[in-house]
Length: 80
Image 1: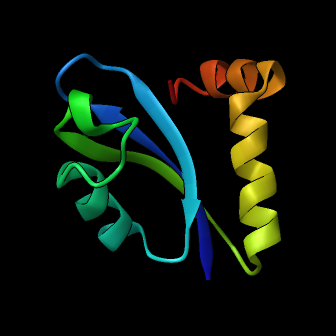
Image 2 (image 1 turned 90 degrees about the horizontal axis):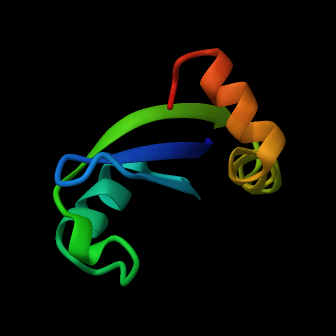
């Protein structure tokens, strides 16, 4: 399985969008400072995720989350 996920920074309440095949190990990478973009906003918590059967579907959903339509979709559902 693959996942599109949203992390929330406990430091400044910003969000990070990504995709992975293992959410727990990916969250550990973010919180360990191994991801350049998220390093300065640690700690992070897993805020939201969706499951997909292929990597391509998860990456497509990640891209949607980053779009204006995705922003509106997430806001309407009180996710972000």
